[in-house]
Amino acid sequence: MDQLLTPVPTGPFQISAQSPSALKLSLILPTFNESGNISEIVKILSDLLDPAWAGRYELIVVDDNSPDRTWKIALELTKQYPQLKVVHRETEKGLSTAVIRGWQAGQGEILGVIDADLQHPPEILLQLLTEMERGADLAIASRHVEGGGVSEWSMIRRFLSRGAQMLGLVILPEVINRLSDPMSGFFMVRRSAIAGVTLSPVGYKILIEVAARGKIRWIGEVGYVFRERQAGESKVTWKQYLEYLQHLIRLRLSRSSRFIQFCLVGLTGVVVDMGLLFLLSDPSMLALPLTRSKIIASELAIINNFLWNDLWTFGDITRRQPSKRQQLKRFIKFNLICLAGLVLNVILLNLFFNVFGLNRYLANFCAIAIVTFWNFWVNLKLSWRVTEVT
Image (cartoon, rainbow, N blue to C red):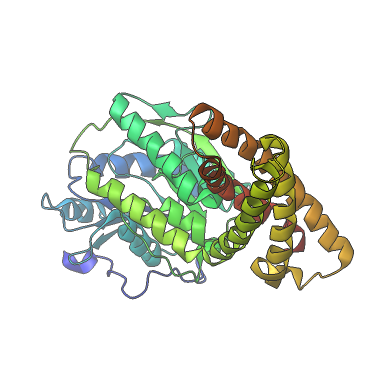
């Protein structure tokens, strides 16, 4: 029966462009010890898709050599379901890599993934396909939009899930902010959006990798209620949360060259800000009120930062549209965004200094550090966006 197995793709984790094929959808079911669920999920998915998609989709089970021989049961099912393929991996392990290997084995224009344990309600699949047909590059089943939720999670599990999302917002805000449910494992992506992109999967969540590295313009989201497992055991462990953190850091570093430049420029702004704050507010100098001194020091630091960012951090963008009018437009946006950050900075400064009793310079430094992430992300999206070329 092994000759019925689909060969395990090898080589880099890279999706090829679609070859001539009538297939619209390749849906991956990554499995490990899902013998109690695999027959039911294949039947449900086939019954859902056959009325409108018969002959235009494939289901691909990618099994990591399950001790309960899930892959053998899936192979038996291929006699009844010709659209079913089975990939049996004996060396590689991991949910994220299983999904990518399945996509590599597939031929569909749309690539999807759904858990085989029935915790993802299969009927949501049709709503995701509707989003893709409307033109979405990425369609996500989300627990955190209207119609979404979880069934019987403990407070600890809810806290860990939301905590993981908040951690992602801190480390990788420009990606996580686009996803209401970055931990979702139920989604579809257009092949053309990730074709030719080298993916670096870590752990059990592949959605963030796709959103961070793919050419994703339009994201559609559909609410769903996460169900409790009916058979088998949950595979969520502390190791997977650590791998999630590792994945976020890896993605941050891969995207951080511009952020590092922004931070270095920000350090020059800190010098300007700190120096002027000392000159204006220190009792031994001009002894002006703290808030007034902070506003003056920050505005001059903003001008310093804009000039350096325009010349260096975003120089590759500004050189394409160097006119004074466009530079002025960027400066106005940058200034308004940073002034909004300044309001937050002033609030934090007074909070740290007047409420928590920190030294005025330590309080100022802490406030600047917190606001730096705000300034970078919003400026990246707005201040220099006018010169981006699609």
